[in-house]
Amino acid sequence: MTVTVYGRSCSSTRKAKQWLKENGIPYVERNIIQDPITIGELHSILRITENGTDEIMAVKSQTYQEMNANLEDLSLHELIEYINKYPKLLKSPIIVDEKRLQAGYSEDIRQFLPRKTRLKWRMNHLAFNRLGDVTN
Image (cartoon, rainbow, N blue to C red; front, side):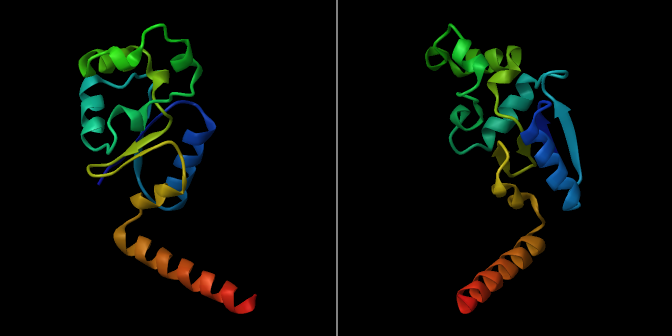
């Protein structure tokens, strides 16, 4: 599966790319400022969100705060066109593959590890926590 990192030149995107490299996960990077996300890509991303645009919008961003339009009054088509025109409205990074999506950088990025690796990590994590309980 191909992982795509849609992001900007920000610390969260750099951390995500570093994590993917360290864990041997190949990815394709897209700087959404230099090469804006397409309307088709936005539709593909929205298909795998759980909360629609709420999941990918950077509502705390300066761009969002400065928008004169009430984005909630826009149709989905109008909102997607707005995002295409103003890519800083998106969280950065947005990490996707064919089935999974993560908006922003957090420890949830582990979902992109191969299943066997995730299970091994979980077992090691549980063992480490039990060891901590015994030594305390």
